[in-house]
Structure formats: C-alpha cells, structure tokens
Image (cartoon, rainbow, N blue to C red; front, side, top):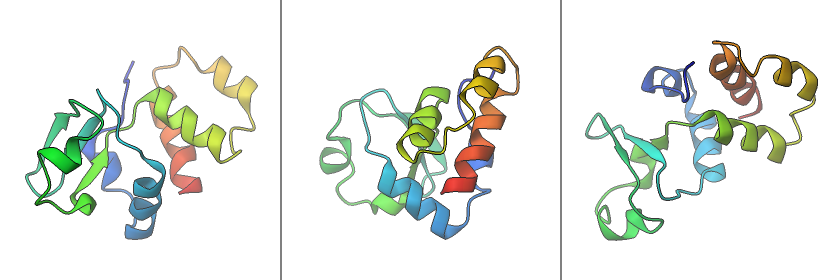
Length: 108
C-alpha cells in the first residue's frame, strides 16, 4: 500500500491549492519534502530546517509529500472528514492514499 503522495500528485495542484497547503503545513522532523528548485526530495532533519540549512531558499520552493496520517490530519482540521466509516472500511485498500488525496485536493 502506498504510504504517501508523490511529486506527480503535487503537480496536480493549482497555485492557489499549493498556497493553502503551505499555510497548513508546519514542517516537522521526519517529514519528506520536495524541493521544486532542485527537483529532489529530502527528509526534514529537524523542525527549524528552513532557517538553518535553507535560509537562501524561498519557502515556496518546498511542499510536503504528505503521508496518509498527514492527509487525515488535514481533513480532520478542516472538518471535512465526514465519512469516517467509509474511510475506516478502506483502511486496507491499496487505494487509501489516492482516496485521501482526492479529498484533500477538494478542500485546498
């Protein structure tokens, strides 16, 4: 089962949706981030990563490769996780990540 979205998923977003995702996302240690400038992904090593190793970069160059858990957090925070039973039934579906992503895209 896929555990997180890929860069392909991020490229589906409009600029407005990317902005909403950046506003919601607070980088945490162990997040996986995609750098659109360098065209590569990396792991966040500590919570203050942007201020230390990437001070010369524009934060708009980065977006998270969201995990299943992070997508559920977004949906819960925006009160859009209305069909809990349906999601619970899909927990072992190979399409869970895709289904959650489609819901996240709708609310961004």
